[in-house]
Image (cartoon, rainbow over all chains, first blue to last red; front, side):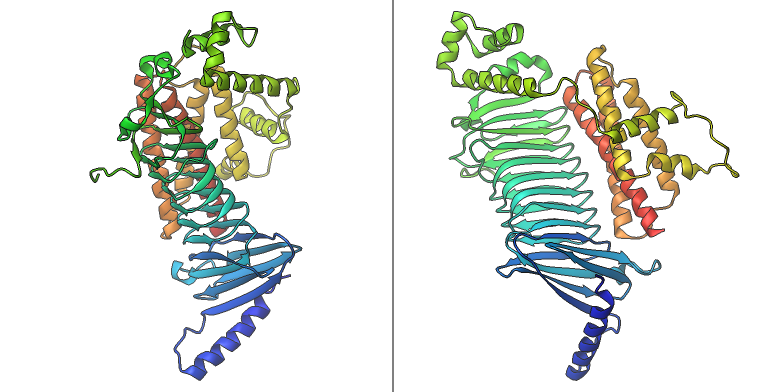
Length: 299
Length: 210
């Protein structure tokens, strides 16, 4: 069911009336569309966006998905469909001659706390807060910020960066130029890969967790806590390993470095009982290992 | 006996009953116990796999398309078209979909990795060199489409493509000097994959905009 035309007309009329009544000055073409989709259980929300602008997803206790679109012009067409508990929102360029400024559009979603998300955009920030459920987030140039989300999180960007604060579950990140900052995580499985971006992991390694972080040319920095327990492998081809926590890491107890011989450039070590597994690598960048509760000179 | 020696015994004799000295070490070494437990899990899982796994049909299609393009196999001759095929037809066959392009490059790299295991180490196996050459040709075609317009997204794609190209060049140079560097090789193959995905994304975007 395409709701764009009717929703747009009604909203435009209301918006115009409000604007005239209050004496505001607004551009004739800018408009706001709001749609409510009642759902049962755990919905799946799919957004395909070609417009420039922010996509913001927050949660509420209500069993409905609310979509609010704010457009700078009428040159982006929005189609919204509901099929059972799946809600699809698709934006397409209605006018091929539209300039980037005409495509400025923001999307605000309010979803139940347990929602599955599949968001795809080209530019502009994707922001998701307090949503529990598997999510696949793709962007070309836009950044992706996640706060207090949990589930199996897959993030793929070309140039956009990821900031993941207090995330839980499993995280896969893949980017060409974007970086990743993982802050205060409760993630049991982490797989981060970027070609030129930097990676920062600042938080606890959960026991039995698996953590792999790879950057082709960037900095891979890990700040672990004193209560952590993990086996560490840090490896580089032509870069450097800056181990500022050497005093806290027990040397390789398996003799692995010796087995690999002179071909291996990096280090193995164990912190605590070695319960989690941490693998860091860079082709030509720097791997930096720090303990969070120790003061180091600034870099 | 040390952990290293246990690993050597396991490499040579598998999980057959270990010598007494090895058993004594394992009995008091949690790392070796974990290691053996992991091996047992892998062996157990391997026994549950079918003898041959049928690859998905799309993989065969991708390989066939690639082999046809390279003239290694030929389709039955069909009636000629009224007009000669444009460059787009040939190019579009490879990049008919992002999935196909990605699977093709992935399959070629995987095949190269298998071939590489069976042959003495070279800086880059011929299959990978051919894939890289093909990607470079496709890159020229994509750039000729003038996709890199004024939009921030086009500019970002162009910038990321240049970054990938620089990185690939760096890895290739390094592997010429140090062909045994497996880590560099892993990064290089991953960069080829990313480049294929990037070119496919640029092409898809060009189609949707134009």
